[in-house]
Image 1 (cartoon, rainbow, N blue to C red):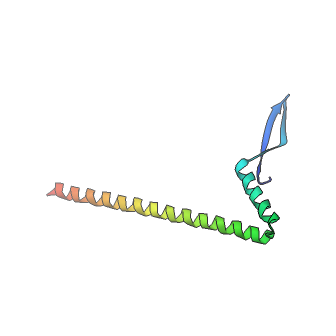
Image 2: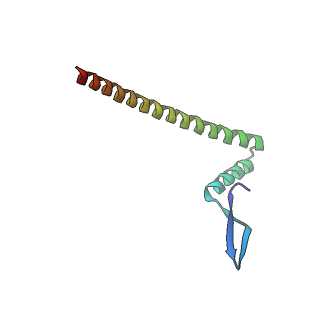
Image 3: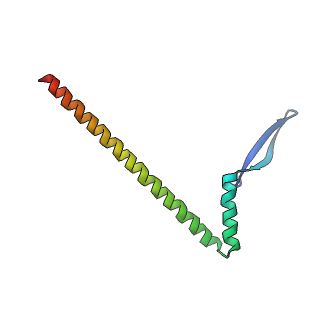
Length: 93
């Protein structure tokens, strides 16, 4: 399967077509960017490293956000748990 395309299957006259392709706009934009960089003089290795660095930064940023959300949820659960345990102990008195 090529990046930038998706397979389009159609059913006509009892026959399924599997060889048709359709452009995926979001992926096509990435392909255009790669060709622009190449035409501007970037080597394939430079293009690869640039995309890898960008992707890696996004992955790290996403992981940091996920960690902050998880910490906030844990804090909230711990606060909720401590308020429940203090309420239960006051009921016992």
